Image 1 (spheres, rainbow, N blue to C red):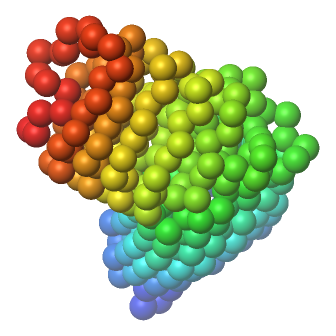
Image 2 (cartoon, helix red, strand yellow):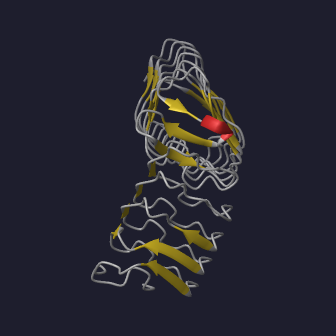
Length: 289
């Protein structure tokens, strides 16, 4: 990149620059402000990773791609503006930006990578525009303050049917993202993520669900009781691990349970099994590790 201007933590990217290189400013906790010109089309991987002093960023309309981990760990970041030409938000792009309370995803975005906004603990709501067709796993894992998840009605691939406050892969019948206010609608076949949703107090799993994915409810410390319907055929690895508030569990006899599904459930006192359970994995699934 051409010579940048620096003055007491204020960075000005030169006009004419087309890419901010990978790791260009990574770990620079002294940076408080960055000005990105309209010539930039790409922000590289880890470009601003762990720039903890950065408080706001405006990504201009010229930018088409935000690289993986580009703003990972920018804990001081409270405001971002994502330009109207961005099509890709890379995996872990804004992971751990704990100061963020609001993000507007423009209707140019098509692909949001795995864990892109994970551990953004201050984020309260998200709206997915109709342009998004690819949503990675765990995009909003650990967003403990999240109360509202909506998808634009015109989206052909994702939906938030019945005002469920969740994000569903339409054709797969998969609940991809959920929050503390999510109501799982009938017709869902797979549940994949409430990971780290500490505000989730109760969950009703409809009898259309066939699979509870790996880590689906991991760390949901507010959950006290779970009834798993007989429609569920598989409970994945670590599906309910570290649910330290879980005291009562009802599971069907026909379900396959992968290892550590209930590890770390230190308060679990009552397990009701409907019928005769198949053999457990090597370690008892609710054994405290």
